[in-house]
Image (cartoon, rainbow, N blue to C red; front, top):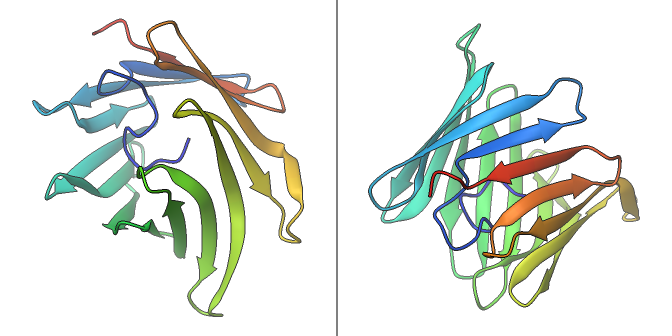
Length: 177
């Protein structure tokens, strides 16, 4: 799922925890929310992601490594047609999420500000307003099966897991609601 706030979690503001399974090391992230139900912070063993808002929209996410205090800041600019995400830290990455009329991301484009180029990176698929899959693309424009993800939901409409083709997954828990 793109890290652009709680867009796909379900009827509650977001998950209480997320657990990465099958990766080089299992990761568990614990979510905390403000009174408006927006994600304020996600705390992992090795890092903390802090979310800040402006005019009700996600404005930035700061990821801080707990051991080195090294920070990476992602900023967001919103329009009706797209969200532009800029990641600064060890260089700069610019991504654009194209939005449909309902505000759901349909495509993710990577931009190279230095070269002035742009290429598609991912396309999102929905069924009954639920994100079902994300197809990722190689540099040559072909679908990369290794980076494709599928999403599953529980009976209450929460995203319960993001399952990657390589067998790794992220499981979301909502028991705090």
